[in-house]
Image (cartoon, rainbow, N blue to C red; front, top):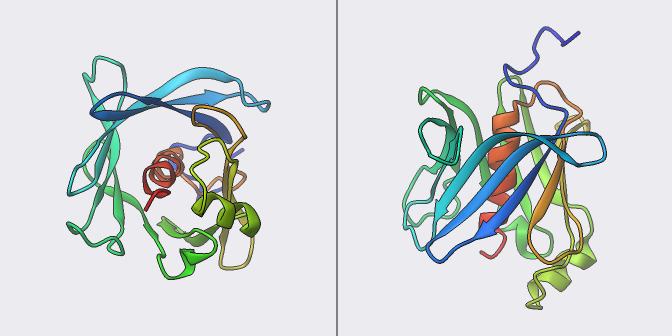
Length: 193
């Protein structure tokens, strides 16, 4: 039985798979079993390349008939401004931003959602430094997001492989699936900056 303050849309684990095209990065977000095998498509997202004001919209299907959530930069060309995560009706359900100062040696992000705040960092500083100084796109990426008390909110992991596929594990039922999915896609989009 979910806790009283559980998120409206909670999923304990899901996967995000990126597909590259010429003008748009596309992401498939699927619910998964505990082993990380996709079981049900939850949303499709698109991020326009070269956009000055970052915006990613998640749709219910490939026909883009219904936008179901998304995230958008608060300010143009201000990388520290952060991103508002909104539901289908445009109401804010979360927020995240990259901490560029703390990210020099280990990428760091801050998140907020109903009833929690947290910080996510790359799990392995050596891998983080190696990733910055090489052009190897298959290096694993692991982020752990913790609340102020050090409790796990969620984690995002990309195994060593060609093609981006992230496994997201969400032990804290306060974290809405849409917030964790937006952050996972945001990590991918912002890692090169």
